[in-house]
Amino acid sequence: MISKKLQLSVLLCLFLLQGVHAQKMIGNETPEQKEKRMEWWTQDRFGMFIHWGLYAQPARHEWVKSYEGLSNEQYQKYFDEFNPDHFEPKKWAKQAKAAGMKYAVLTTKHHEGFCLFDSKFTDYKATNTGAKRDLVKEYVDAFRAEGIKVGFYYSLLDWHHPDYTMDENHPLTKKDKSDAAYARLNKGRDMAKYRQYMRNQITELLTKYGKIDILWLDFSFPKPNGRGKGKDDWASVELLKMIRKLQPGIIVDNRLDLDEYKDGADFVTPEQVGTAELAKYKGKTWETCQTFSGSWGYYRDENTWKTHKQLLDLLITSVSNGGNLILNVGPTARGEFDHRATSALDSLSQWMHANDKSIYNCTYAPDSYRVPQNTKLTYNPKTKRLYVHLYEYPADGKLILPGYNNKIKYAQFLNDSSELIYKPSGGDDLVVSLPVKKPGFTIPVVELVLQ
Ligand code: GLC
View 1 (cartoon, rainbow, N blue to C red):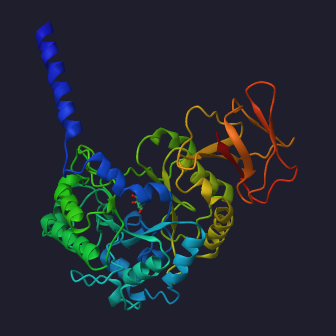
View 2 (cartoon, protein in one colour):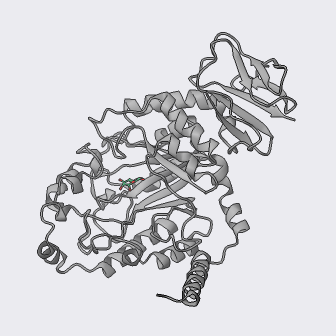
View 3 (cartoon, rainbow, N blue to C red):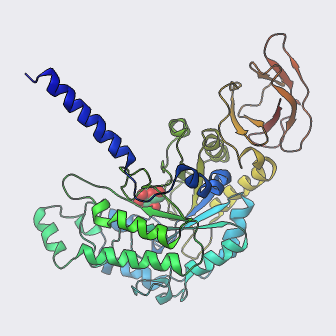
């Protein structure tokens, strides 16, 4: 039997340890400074992810090298063939801007190891392919010219580098998972050299392209059996310190495996989750990353493309829970957005042109406003306007605002600023009269000016 006293001191120790844990810091930024640094990002809400690399050619998932266990030699044909003759990032930037996306993040290197930029530290890069130029530079210039904030995705994993050691995701471990195979394949590999390579490349990315707004590092998968990778493999603490030194204003995602530090990440990244799940992130700083269809890289035969309504729902639900949405496009190997992506972006453009005030600078509504039936709310705390997104247009032309009597002073459609007449229902509710004919938007928005 453990004595009561001992039990109590163990509990006390655990409590204190937890306290220390939560306080652990890498830098010394105050919460106020962080809020200021993140301000534009929290207000902009909507970004474009771009996954582009050699995997656009097999066109069957950006993980194809791992899924099919391909060696560097087997994958070489994609490098030899790479020649994106339709690459015009100015077009990408215009499409992103029209869709209302305020920032973009491009894969400068994905897990396959191929670099879209002209790195001094490898030959495995765009300049040595048919493209013959630094594609990252052109992306940066084009997006900046459109006033879109510029971000880089950089893969921590690297399935091409000769020093990158084996783990459960590595293509070469696909066929044989025995310890003997690991030992054989790891022979001559030196993770310390790979770490240096990564630091060198991230330094290039953060020093040669001007101000970089976001760095999206991907990803960690620590495993108790040693067949994963995490903070020690990447030397994450040192890496993050270096990043912050090179670009003090930069915003960094949470995939370096630094959860034990209060400032080990700027935002969390729920990936491909359904809208119902997003409510659980309310109160955190977060961005959900989502694809138009099932894969990040261009996937010719993937046909589960999200509908316009599903895409809008993702955007509205993100904002209504105080988060961001980054929506991914996987350009083709010729360097352009295919027709499915283009038409999805076009419909978003139409909606955003008319309704973007319910997205930018908005967040969740104060608790005192109940959510009317079949709607989702967003709220702009500065202008004190509440946005009611009509998921189902009321057949009887009546929108009931539960408990809103004496809480609003004006109502209008957001898309055309046309007045909507409302009156008390007798009790605490208000009834807004809507035209019988639904405005030409999949999800129309009612704007309420609060008292
Ligand atoms: C995952 C995948 C990757 C994709 C990323 C985007 O971690 O490995 O292919 O780039 O998510 O969030």
